[in-house]
Amino acid sequence: MSGNGRPAGLRPWSLDEVASHVARDLPAGAYVNIGIGLPTLVPRQIPASREVVLHSENGMLGIGPPPGPGSADPDLIDAGKNPASLVPGGSYFSHNEAFAMITGGHLDVTVLGAFQVSQSGDLANWAMPGHKLPAVGGAMDLAVGARRVVVVTRHTARNGEPKLVSACSYPLTARGVVQRVYTDLATIDIRDDRFVVAEAAPGLEPCYLRKVTGGELVWPS
Amino acid sequence: MSACGGRGGTIDKRARTAREAVAGVRDDATILVGGFGESGVPCALIDALVDQGATNLTVVANNAGSGERGVAALLRAGRVRRLICSYPRSSGSVWFERRYTEGTVELEVVPQGTLSERIRAAGAGIPAFYTPTGVGTELCAGRETRRFGERDYVLERALPGDVALIRARRADRWGNLVYHCVARNYGPTMAAAAALTVAEVDDPIAEPGDLDPEHIVTPGIYVDRVVHVPVPSPVRP
Image 1 (cartoon, rainbow over the protein chains, first blue to last red):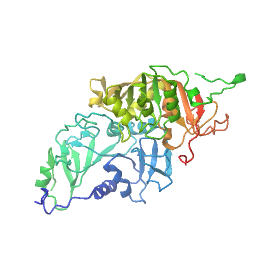
Image 2 (cartoon, one colour; image 1 turned 90 degrees about the horizontal axis):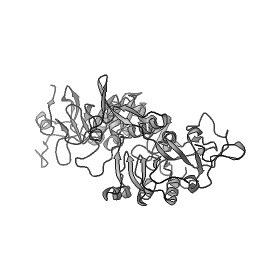
Image 3 (tube, rainbow over the protein chains, first blue to last red; image 1 turned 60 degrees about the horizontal axis):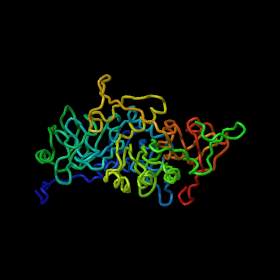
Image 4 (tube, rainbow over the protein chains, first blue to last red; image 1 turned 180 degrees about the vertical axis):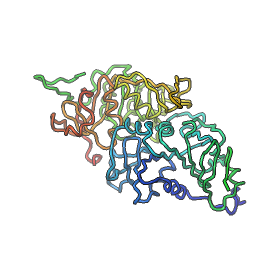
């Protein structure tokens, strides 16, 4: 073990590598909503040759890269309220239509951040326990509406507590919705109320992964 | 409502000033305010409403404003009794935080799609609807739920406004509206859901026929007053 309690041979993935794993799994032609926080690292990992259409809940399909200096338009922002651009073929529509796309099941994938994910796919990503200033945004709509909900997150919280847990202790966003979690240690599917390892970071041993993961973990041999 | 009829049988919904455009808003009114972040916020109408003086308002908006702008101006002036909002907290939401912490503003937090759909339902004459969003969460605790097929849904009620304040890029004097980029956001939905809908518009108000009917997003039937509020040139792309 090294000083931080991490096995000496373990080389966790960088956050950009984690984002590249998410991007790798987005097929051409997919309509995808990218949440705020770590998910915002994903779009730049999508190869320019692969046409994936990014959806924004404030009324846009086809979000492009951030605009260059001096070309930002205050009326063209993404869901995180950052300056955005529109790719050729993109479109604008009302907020209401953006959410009808979400709850109507038209989005192929949403990539969300998380405080906690449970082994049954429950998601907690909108509020801390005992929150003083609540704000929810589109998290609950995305979590129940997208055909596939995936989460990108560090494997553990800053205090070292597992973020993959047997049951969420944080306020829930939605029940039983998360299908895959991408972390800096592993890519993990949620199947039959268990965490199932699909891919592991170099040097990751099952015993260490179990130590930093709550809930039931299966590592197929 | 045809708030500003023209002379000689013509339709003229133009107001000369933002202050004139918000005339008649009463205390205790429910005000739907368009905008997402800084885009599409009808700042001139909000400032005019602060001057106009209506108070004890229920404000429905996606965000609670940033700095002194937008909904923050009403919060700062102490005109808001209740805020129905999806994402009131942001880096600049100091007036929301102050009023909420001191207990002078009630807050109802609503998932964003539900907020938008409650407003849409009001505009379409639908009193309530079931949605999958929020089922099993603390935001929907104790609420009426019903199972359709294999899934649970929560009952949500329509959210009509006495007044809607929205922003568009272009309008004609009939109140037809065209928007710019994602400044559209809540505009078309709120326009239909209020007894009095007022739009502030970036460009000078056009004549009927000047707007391409294929491009009109909000038909004038939903709009009662339009007022031209030029955007400062350094801001407008």
